[in-house]
Length: 65
Image 1 (cartoon, one colour):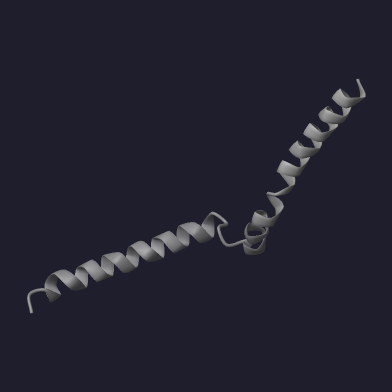
Image 2 (cartoon, rainbow, N blue to C red):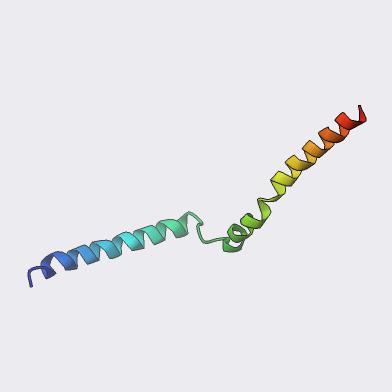
């Protein structure tokens, strides 16, 4: 029964910590645009294609010379 004296305050502190983290996340716009974060995985593939295009253009230039 003595564990209640430790468990209840620990649970209250944990709840306060979780509420504070949630409040911080909302204030820092962590939940504003949830769809864009999911689309970033699909959009990251564009950069290697640009690099590949630059390499292809260099190879074409080298082949032309």
